[in-house]
Each structure stands twice: as structure tokens, then as C-alpha cells.
Image (cartoon, rainbow, N blue to C red; front, top):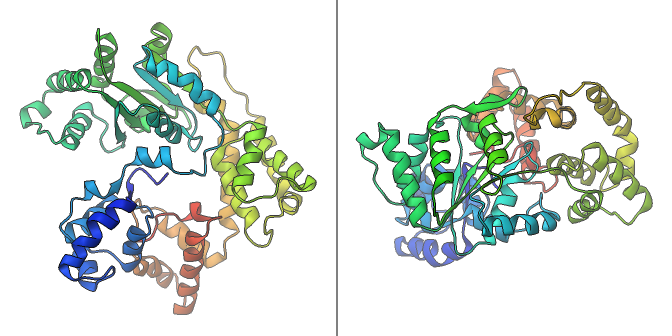
Length: 432
């Protein structure tokens, strides 16, 4: 799936809405006037036309410039998760079979927990597809908007409803208003990346909500006699409050902790990425890699990308021969750290501490295998949370005394990585 602040155009909308709109203006697909009015580059417009993820702001500007409603053009992220072939998705059919009856029954709040990249958001999307009677409403939680009132206001705005300044200052009113909205309508509200509105971090765990009005909302939502809507939360960890709710009211509130792929799923994942699992040596190497990363989709995806790329060209045995010992050493070092399991609340961040650190270490090694100037450029630009222009990227190397030829070569390398199926994860969505 694309990042939570990115969107994709619907193929039907491009053909039925956007193309007639530009024909009416007598523009072509890459008209200079369109680029100017939308304040985007040709590359971004190309991503728009080819259904690649682009920033929401750019998407809106592109649509506004041709006088079309962007909300009618965007491919719903839940639809994307449920209808497309996603890189992280293999198996999970048994789990889906277990969760569907819960949501069809009395379960009102389903919490999907697990470390980043394990497939929580994708699973939420797949579950949403099983409930066509519920209108999916996706809200990506942000560290910039942790208070209940702001999120509730955003939801009402998306529904085309106005929230008055007085209501915004009075969370009690907004809690009741949102509860009534969910009670009277059939929604599947997905609060994605809940950890962003919790206190804590990946190192020490997440302890509680930044805004206690969230607890008030969930208390009232779970205590309603009748409610037509359901809620799915995705989070890297449980708070003490949510853990207690799942313990005290297991029928109404259920937590499902996602683990990595099984051995069979790992091999199937590698096969879908284009790796040969029938070759005995290749299969053995891939099984070792899968075990090393505990079946973690993001880790497997990163390694699969490297194996598919030069100089290995899909030879997993050759890759393991070169990097296997180093990877095992990293894993062994982190496994020496003892995990405290004496607390009542399961520490999901601690449970996978070894895996998380192994992932970080090996991804660091992947980055370091970039050519020096490209690696340097990526490090300098990594602090920016939104895509930046090519000129801005190049200015970093200019300040460092690199020649114009060296600057262009470094940028070309990153562009090749960005367009590579194997390695898009390194710099995806970094260029404006």
C-alpha cells in the first residue's frame, strides 16, 4: 500500500472524469499550463496518470487545476488493499477466517497489533472487503493531531458535516456526536497507526493516549446497547487501557497480535517476488533468510530486492554465501538481550526487539552498499518528511563540493532505485 499521506488515481476516474476535463480545456496529458497551475513536476503528473502513489496535496492540486473533485478521482485506500496484489500479502486466510465471525458477531473493536511492516494495515483492508454492508472510513493517525477533538472534526469534515468552534472546544459534545453517528450508520472506522496518538516510542513501548478523551470515547462506544458500526485499530503496541478492555470485555474488544509468515508463506512470498524456490540451494538459502527475519514481510521484501538485483540476479545461495555469516552474527548479538516477560501487559515492542534491531541493522547495510555519493545524498535528504525537488536534492551535493557530473550521477542512481521493482522501498515517494 502507499504511505498514509499518499493517494492513487482510480483508472475509471482517469478515463471518465479527468480525460474529458482536459479535453474540455484543450490540454494534453502533460500540458505546461497544467503543471504550472498545479505546481507539480512532469514526473509527478506522470505518476498521477500511471496510478502511482503521490502526495495528497499534489493530487488535490492536479485535480483542482482541471476543475474536478479529487475525492471522485482517488482510489480508496481500503479498496486498494482489498483488490490489489500487495507485496506483503501471502496467506493469512486462516486468520481472516477467524476474525470475520468476530466482526460479524458482537465484536465492536478489533485491534491489530505488531511491529511496523508486519501487514496490519493490509489485513485491515482485506477485512473491510469482507463487509460490503459497512462503509469503510480510513483515518491515518498522525503525531501532529493526537487530540480526540481534532480527529473527530476531521471525520465529520470528510462526511461533509460542519463542526462549530464551540463544538471543537468541547470534546464532550464531539464524543456524543461521533457516537451517535456511528450508532445510526453502518461504518467500518479504521484508525490506522494508532501508536502515533499514544505516548511512548518503539524503544520503550507505548503507555497511554496523549488525550484521555479517547478513553472516554471507547468506554461509551463499547457500552452502547446497540451500534451499527465497527472499529478496527492498527497499532504497534497496546496501551494498558486497551489491554484491560480486551481482558475485561473479550467479546466486545479483541486484540490480534500479528506475527511473521510461516515457512510455507515465506517461500510463497519469495516466489511471488520472482525468486526460484524450486532450486535446492536457493530454497535452502531462502529458508535460512526467512527464519532469520522471523517471516517479517518488510525484511523479506528488502532482502528479496537485493537478491534480485545485481550482482546476484536472483541467486539466493550466492547472496547467503556472501552475507549469511554477517547477518547471523547480528541476530546472535541482539538475541543476547534478555526480554522482560514478568509484566502482565505484553510488550509487543520488546517481544520483537531482536527482530526489529536485526531489520534495522541489515537495512542499514543495504543502504551502505549504495555508491558513496548516492548514499551521502540520501542521508542528507532523509530528514525531510515530504518529497522535495530534484534541484533541492542536488544542492546538498553542491554544498559538499561535488561536481555537476557527480551530482547528476548520484541522482540518476537514486532514480534508478526508485523505479526498480526490487529496491523501490529505499527512496519511494521521495521526489517531487
